[in-house]
Length: 170
Image (cartoon, rainbow, N blue to C red; front, side, top):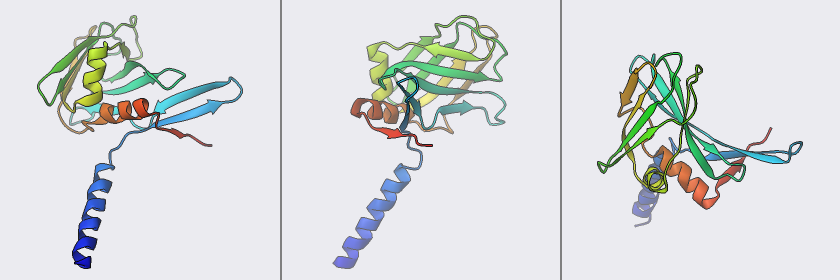
């Protein structure tokens, strides 16, 4: 009986560790000189083609209090300049959010997307099935359903909601 319990416990630990292999969490750094706290994700959600020649890095911009501010995107290989970019996230339950970037014309590949409370709630609770990003200037796009952590934003919003931040030390 003890042996069976030990094996069961080890199996649960292995499952838990496997589930943590792609976990995303939030660091914070306190700048004493500016008396400001900065927050950053440990990982970004990267969507890329098989050749890794086109893609997008999705992340979150945080307020100085560690709250969600907006979604950020860095477009790579989708044209040099961009504006009016589109981000479509299809969730595993079949629902989706459609976003259009709000920042001005940009030749560094940066795009910023605001979310409504309903959209933020979906991103915080539903696993992602597919992501598509379209450069609104060149109309080049990337669509992918694999190669990234589908629970990335769920993990980040869990950290935000529960104030689970890790101090980034020198």
